[in-house]
Length: 387
Image 1 (cartoon, rainbow, N blue to C red):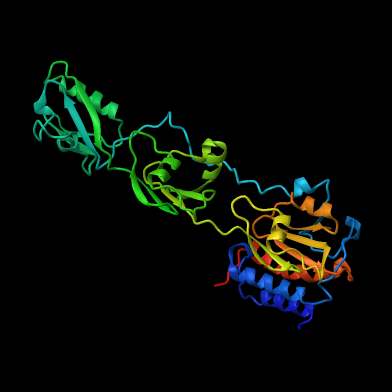
Image 2: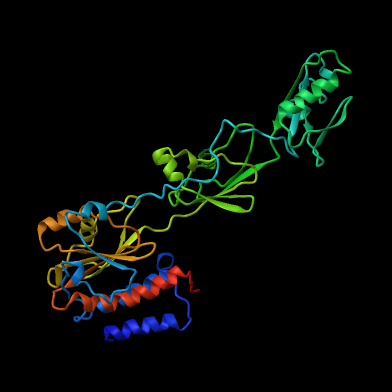
């Protein structure tokens, strides 16, 4: 077996050669490298055994600045072990329906009815539909109308067109009673794609279309959909929308009104997993589901601690935060500790590591593990990728 330091230095050297590593959160290969490193450490007696520092002053001064060690206690377990909050960020897009107005566009079909003057209304015959008797807005943005010739309508509200026709037809018809409608909305579309049952294009009409309505009109979300990471592409810019927060809390800003040309994409959800390593009966991957599970549940799900070698006082949870790595320490050598652990909820990509009998100092193992994790973290922070 390689010495632990040699293994860590080898991985660090691999990172420093210029070869690309995959960021831990987004890559199965990057994850493999990390698990492989920890597995080698788990198999080496010298580094799979440790005892716990009981205070901050006992923790190694050699730890990187981005590492924070947190002993789990009854005083902090509720705060540290809380479920991961949904990213209830506000969308930048408007959700107002009251201000919605539809502007006529090229390709729309307008129906113009002049009451008591069927010769101006039903050009396709008395039994024709509004669509058949309507006028298509041409590429120049206008329609042809008897007596008036070309009338520009594109970009205008239906009410404005109706008022203009009423005024201009008064020259030919006393007190004309005119009604203008859009018989077919063809000018503007919204495209819904990704993890929905039936991706499709939807017409934008005089009735505002919200994000949720568009997704429902596309058959709804699939089981694999990530409704927290919906994107709307508008005018060359992408906007993030957490639709789940709207459905869960009614956060209106995350159900914006869509506009013509919007492209809605619902991505496939990344697996929500934690990783169980070390002296546990069945090391492996734990599926956290949608709501996460507790540390106690995860240990139980994997068969419990390996009683022949595990030290219940040596349970670590490594968590990669935005700007640091947190290492949670749990001394589970007493029953009350496992009760506490039911309140500690695992988060995606947590690594649970269970050590063996305490014979070596904490600093020995932690200073050997962190160069490996640190190399992967640096790759993540600078966005390096490996293909």
